[in-house]
Image (cartoon, rainbow, N blue to C red; front, side, top):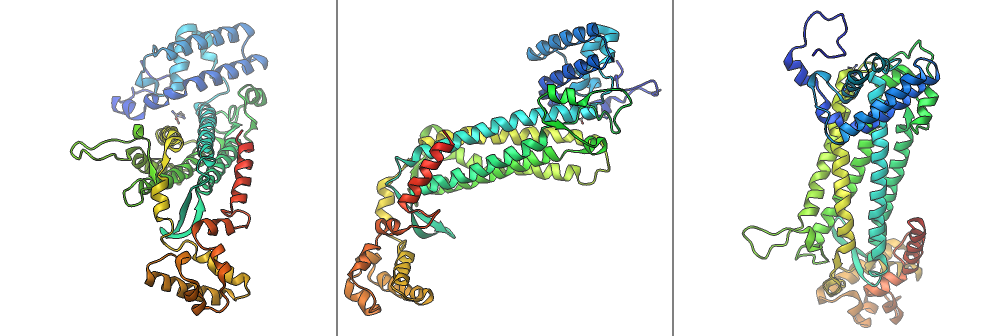
Length: 458
Ligand code: ARG
């Protein structure tokens, strides 16, 4: 059978090789729910403006629902000559209803149809991602009370820098994920504009009502320019950027916890359900889930790259190149979803190795900056204090002790401004307690933030 898109203008049959080359049904069948919902809304609009009769609409809707059932059960055969999901559904309708079905495509093109379907699909997928992001935020938040007593080194350049409360780390990830959710929401607003009714590229001469279909399909409004809309895939690229940013956050987190789970760090135990063994080394418990999270993030970012390249040289408006947007789009969503689904139980179930962390927390002079600020409070210029504390750290290194174990005589030799009260800020416990600024790891500030997030994520 010839493709329904081949009008009477064609004298030759389609080459078989082109049929296989051009089909998208193998991947866009994922849009069938959206396609049928969009078609019913479109037919309903055609009825209300008088382009089809009440009876025709009833028949179309009924038959489209039957087709939906067939698709649900995988009963509608794929035929490459029908190219995509849009023509499969339409042809099934025509096969069942004849001329009535032949009216469905009135004032519609696959160009506005595919954009409508994909926008509806992305909208739902973004909602799912947002739900998963919220779940992951809750997993981090759920750890905050239990881990409140644990002090961990904060690193810069992956060198020990300053001491922080473990929940300060967890809250850091909650913030990142919140920005991700903000991007999801912003993106969703631009996705959720109805393209339906721009038809192929210039609009239609028929008296359609675009507002009606937009409202029926849950869009916030309609797109304003038919040429722009026919060509526009910004929403596909933008959503894949949003996913890439999420993937980047998850990859950084995975890398950190992979390091933390090594013998060298020994900060965390990843739940064994999410680890694998080695086929030769019996002692191995490998953090494969986290490694795959780091690895799969590359796929998500690769999708964004593919999409950027896909659209960059396209003249207005629709070009068939755009069909190639779906595999990277779907893959980016599927991959990000899987990454989030696995991150959440790992975050919730991992155990901090309290003793191991505590055994080495006084190494690395995490309290040096606190000491410097103590000198500043005494009236010493920052640069002078910075230099002095460097010398004090040098003396401690020589003796092989932490700052808190330097005898007062040694300290006084290095600066006459130091007295016994200096010990109140030395040692990581004291150093953490000395913080006060907003956004810092000060226990009171961290408590406030936990309370804020408990309310926000409730
Ligand atoms: N399968 C096509 C796509 O995904 C649908 C639009 C086809 N439009 C066209 N004028 N051939 O882009």
